[in-house]
Length: 307
Image (tube, rainbow, N blue to C red; front, side):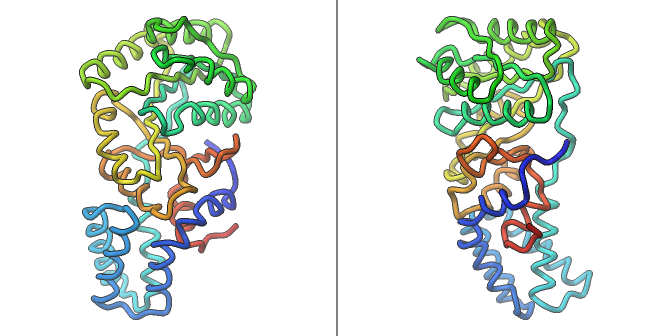
């Protein structure tokens, strides 16, 4: 999958992050000697940057081992090694699978995290790659949810399937996938209700939606993306845990990364939830949802990559 957007766009989106705790790490390590004080300061700054205590300890321990194994001498060498370790922490276990005919992306998450706008940006991204995209308004419980998604669908220039307010979400998705299969659509992106309700009800509802995809078209593939707000950081992790458990989520969209100085939440989310970050939002524009690249992200944290 080709990267969408430029390295510069990611670097610009991480500007607030670089001038915060990650800037402190860069300044502390650049031109320094490698000693216990350096490791202690690094661990503290990683925790402050929202990487999470467990992740911070593990990264520092891994850096100690890397320094010993490679016989690194300077803080600058240790910083380069740290970037590599951060990128390794964030690598996905498998490719994002859009091989189905059609491919289906279910988008889940609580209200207010940027779910609807992320769906529109995904549609814009893949339409820009030449794919035929269809949206499904599967959030039939929230008043005006379909209308809101419809406005974004128009902006993205893609069609949408919707049902009546209060309709069965699985039926809406079934209709959308059936229509996509009949019309040769490449990708169906489905909105879902963003309610933090009973876990069993959530699990049952999302399982029913998944079954409706298989019934509508056995050749369809399904990815389930959980949308999280980067600004809420570690708080987003506990909030999202029940969605992960209930929905068999396969990846994360992390929005509003440009609005936080604590870019370490990307690392914390990856480790705590056990899910790869697939996309990051770095602005409000339609082009501001980027396919996540661990190496570019690690460079962007410190502003040391090529533009």
